[in-house]
Amino acid sequence: MEKENIEKTTFNVFVNQQRQVYKNIVSVKCPVLGGKVYFTSDGFAHLIYESNRVPRKLSEQYLKLISFIKYVPKILLTGNKIEEIRCISRKIKGKLTKTLYYEVTGFYKNKKLGVIVERRGEGRLKFKSVIPYYNRRKTKSPSN
Image (tube, rainbow, N blue to C red; front, side, top):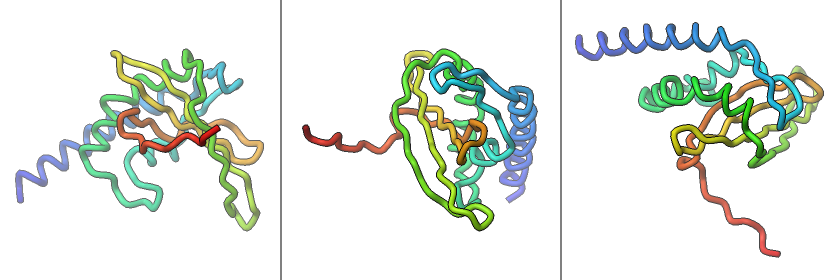
C-alpha cells in the first residue's frame, strides 16, 4: 500500500510538471484550420479525465502527457490534413449549440497522431485531445 502511495505521489508531481509545460503553450497557429488553437484548462483536464470526469488509466494519462503532448504544437503547425470532422449539437447553458470536432493528423518519429480540436458555435478553436492513430476505432468507409 505504501509503495502505491509513493507511486501515486510521484505521478502527481509529474502531472503538475506537465501542467506547467502545457500552460506555456498558450496557442499555436494552425494553417489547415485557418486560425489559432488555444490550449485551455479543459484540454488538459481531458488528457487526465474521461468526458464524464472519471480519471483515465494512469498508463493512458502518462502516454498522452509524456509521449504525445510535446508533439501537438508541431502537428498543428505543420499538419496539412483534416482527417475527420464531427458535428454535435449539445445544450450549453440552456442553449442548443453546434460543436465541431476536427482531427488534424501528423507524424512524429514515423508514428501517426491525431490532434482533436473543438469549436463551439462561432467560438475559438481549442485543443481537446491527442490520440495515437493506432488506437482509433476502425470505421468502414461508405460504398460508392
